[in-house]
Amino acid sequence: MTDCTVYTHAAVFTADGADAEALVVRGDRFLYVGDEAGARRAAGPGAAEVDLAGGCVLPGIIDAHTHLLMTGQSLQKVPLRDAADLTEIQARLRRAAAENPHAPRLLGTGWLYGALAGAAPTRALLDEAVPDRPVYLDANDLHSVWVNTAALAELGIEDTTPDPIGGRIGRDPVTGTADGMLYETAAQQIVWPALARAATDADRDAQLESVFEHYLAVGVTGAVDMAVQDDDLAAFRRAVQRHGGALPLRVKGHWLVHRRDSDAENLAQVDRAAELAEELSGEWLRICGIKIVVDGVIDSCTAAMKEPYADGSTCEPIWDRESLTPVVVAADAAGLQIALHAIGDEASDIALDALEQAQRINGPRDRRHRIEHLETVTEDNVRRLAALGVVASVQPVHADPAIQDHWRAVLGEPRTERAFPWTEFVAAGATLAISTDAPTAPHQPLPNLYVATTRRSALDSSLPPNLPHYALDLADALCHATRDAAFSCRAEHQEGRIRTGHLADFTVLEADPFAAGSAQLLSNRTRLTVVGGRVRFDADGPAATP
Image 1 (cartoon, one colour):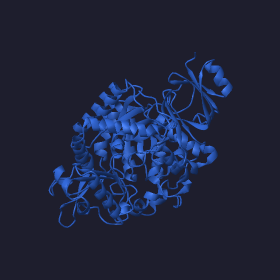
Image 2: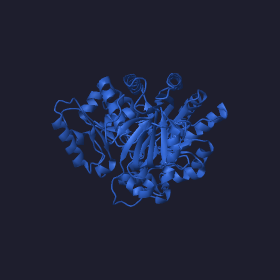
Image 3: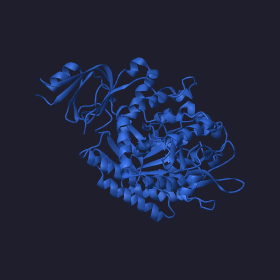
């Protein structure tokens, strides 16, 4: 009896330029990719056979920028992304409070500035809904947290509490009292640790298992976690133990480096990341490098822009050149991949300057550094990024027209006419990696690919496309979410393609998107997800158990 499985009667997108209609899997790898007759010969007599009945096989999708534990946590929070206005936000909070009378605090996620119709998010507005316990609401972009009076008290934030470096405690412009908004590092360094202390390891384990299940159910076989900290790492280690040395999907991580008071404190975090990268370099869990959040986001006017926002305001970066460059040079010298969050056009300037300095000091080699988001970027910096071999890591779902009104209003013309210029990176010769940045956006890859290929909304079909000349070709977009996502985390020799010898990570869709068109991506269904040759999700039956 052969130990092979033959998969037949499918449209196979290999992301490798090859034509195929059948696969043979032996152990955890592809033994053969090609025609059905060749597949049966390669497998030999007695091989198991799976008839895919006209489904479409894709390489396993790799979410090249996500936050696994945070996504698992977000799945348990009050969802607010689709709340139409403040009244709806308050109604959902009141309902959650009534349904959970003994919960010590209420957590919500995904609220949009546009839902407030110009009103300022203040603690008083949340106090109206829930005055008796702390409320913490993550903004859709996760770069700010809106809290009520009880939460400020729980955090120990008073009117005179100083702002952390790179962040801000929102204050009433007249009285100076804390208003309930915590921006950037005030969220990352005050709120996140406080909520982590309030959770248990059992909570985190359940949240991580939940996000694994959700990802497998939509065809994702690998993920790059872009803000690994101690709690995340401990949860990953426990999961490896629970699953017998493996994980349900392949996890790569970037250690989050916080801006501190001194170069010595910043560089100590690089040293920690280098130690973890040496220790954790396996097939299922690997630390690739570091993540640095150079600036904020446009919605809250915290992204570092070359010119003022539409209201005349400006914002300094979280990391200036003087603080960033030594960290980038040290991490590069240690062989770590560097992922730099840069949304504003000034932030990408700062990031590229630091990467250029690292190359000058440390010499030429294959670095595989990345810049994340790149929502606004000059044409010169598009070319500079490509020349440096930097991966452009983008999240098409952030360009969904349904969430763009406030973004475009605060940025102002003419910069909105070159927003999210994905095709410019490809034309310049850069590698483009597609991801979701969940939970700042839904984790499902197919709606993300719909936005990528149409520039239309996955949330509201009535809206016109936004800058459709930047839309990606469907085959190219699929490659960016598989082959190029694997390249972005130095995994292209084993992942991201359906190719003989590669790891047998693949997903089977119910319908062929090339036959049905991009619009069908919104209704397509994942039938099967296979990781390392094992069926981890089957829409028609139970997934394999560890």
